[in-house]
Image (cartoon, rainbow, N blue to C red):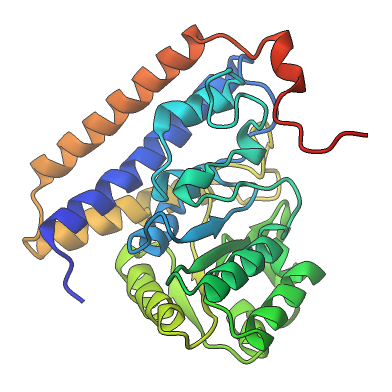
Length: 322
């Protein structure tokens, strides 16, 4: 499907915003002023944006540890996200969730998750809700390659098929589950093939190629909206940072990440494709990157100036009393 110029500009803008956000978070985390754990998404932008481009606020997503890219692709506010990562009162979750539990239910972002594979069961509930209400909504579950070995993910795939739910699984294969390679940790080594065994179509795509991801996802989303049940994609793309910030990445080869950034970067692939095809101009794309950098810079300034939650906030957002 040929995307419009506005769609292409929007897709590139979102991809570079994720990249600028993640690179800046890496720098800010080193100062020691950002509490908690941080898991960065840089390198995988084409997956989140390709998967979410055709979604609206009726649709929901379930995320992973590495949730910033999913948030931005789903339309969450950049300043609200940065405030949340700095633990500020006006962050998306009141400064109480941080990076690993960031969520925005108004945008259909069910949350990043500190439990590996826990996003998959959540989207089963969301998919069942959409099917029951007949609102045309679709539930997208991002699942890392390591999480595909979790029992909860297997149970979720089975339930999605048995209940014939409007669900799409996006298996993000960045080749390393925490510090262990896929070739060692994933039985058969074929995530898409393993998921297909549950009785749903699952396509394997190059996750560095926005167009490949979007085309595959468009078919999955249409299938779900038509009531034809679950499906999925396995998208392969490396991450540039460690499992968490501070991870020395001793499990990676010398020059491996630099090679990815230089030769296989998803932003460069996108830019080359659209410029060579005469769909966008380099000047437009440079302006989008500068704009993204400015938005992220303003968000950091706002976060650093904002207050943390007060003592009175300790007893808010509590849903169970004993």
